[in-house]
Length: 499
Ligand SMILES: Nc1nc2c(c(=O)[nH]1)N(C=O)[C@@H](CNc1ccc(C(=O)N[C@@H](CCC(=O)O)C(=O)O)cc1)CN2
Ligand SMILES: Nc1nc2c(ncn2[C@@H]2O[C@H](COP(=O)(O)OP(=O)(O)OP(=O)(O)O)[C@@H](O)[C@H]2O)c(=O)[nH]1
Ligand SMILES: [Mg+2]
Image (cartoon, rainbow, N blue to C red):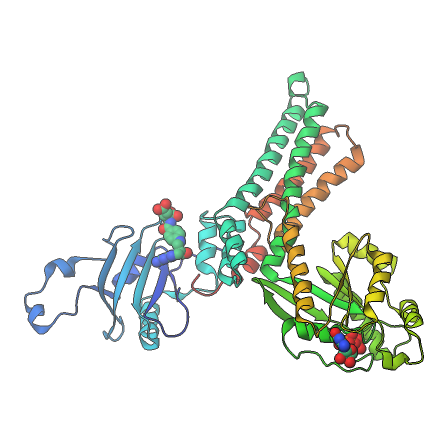
């Protein structure tokens, strides 16, 4: 709901700073400011005598848009001088929110800030809720929902890449692509409706070639936008990497080593880890979220079985799976010769089933086989065997927690994978939220249903029109042209108070 009351909040952060900026927005902001703002320096007895009439006549309402003034804030209830400030006037619709606005920058101390806010509230304003300024800006058509999401990301960005992506989104590049999709749909729908309206005029018929090329143009744009989703999401949220493998394969040790933290318990007893443990590290700005999981094996007790269930669940939610394989330490199988030790391990090794690998592939999860503990002599041979088994299709890496360069190599592989996600795709524009992705996906599904039902032949025009209208509705929900209150609330609540 747009409420037209006057709202206020500090746009600057908590804590001590040189200055703090209070924002006031809504019709009547300037009148409200006039209740608390006195132009010019504090009048001394002497100067009061020869009252500066030019100063006393000035009002905030009388200021031009973007004009600033020096003065003091006086509490309307107590008459106390609150602070020495600079005030800026914005005239509707030329302001951030599109409403009449006033900004007051005061000294950054906690008491100054508190007193200024109090004065403002006493003059009749109310505190803004989180994101309320931006929500008003959106409702006044200052930016689309796509840009609003970009703005939220901009404020929350912790990595440089994330900030760059958000700024692009804010500048409207992504919004423009969405608009292109909408325009193509609208044009198509208009054409289709002409055909329905004037069936007797052959010039309004849609020909098959045109039908197919219009459909293709829309689908191409959609897939182009969706293709960038993974990288966009990863830049924002980080890349999720699951460590899987048999008990004792070295998963917990590897995670600890990669995140430089003694996070997970490591012992030589198989079945040490039972819960999924997460730890993060930044590599070249990319947030890597490692998930250590319970070792996979049959015949485990109930607790371990539950842990194993979670291992699979985690793997299926990950972007990258590191599947660890290692030869058991010699002390556990001291009676076996090296050759048979490897054979033994290979038959015992817990390897992903074909079905599981297919699921990873369908989800676009990148799987790496990692022969762990490569400092131990036996591992080179098992690496060769794993390469025989999987090397055609999957990368087989090796690592040892005792060898820093092998860990760096592993981390670099993950980073290279992340970079490869954006290759060959329109670099500038990327869908970055699940909401956007899902909306575009819904549109693709609607179009796919149509081609599934009618193949390459033109469907009855009313069916086509219905389908196009459904797509248009989806895209307008995305851009916010059809604002959905629940969606607005979720998006703007990600903002802080004062934004
Ligand atoms: N003091 C101050 N600095 C700030 C902001 C602010 O609100 N206040 N911003 C807050 O995010 C950012 C800048 N964003 C802004 C966006 C639009 C308008 C604005 O007045 N728009 C008018 C006029 C545009 C024009 O001249 O072309 C408009 O849209 O009509 C101002 C700031 C960062 N710096
Ligand atoms: N030599 C050597 N030993 C390692 C290496 N990584 C792990 N280990 C040892 O292997 C044993 C098992 O390591 P963990 O990290 O607990 O193995 P895990 O895969 O987490 O095992 P579970 O939690 O039981 O599934 C420990 O004794 C580690 O010290 C390595 O790179 N080199
Ligand atoms: Mg473990």
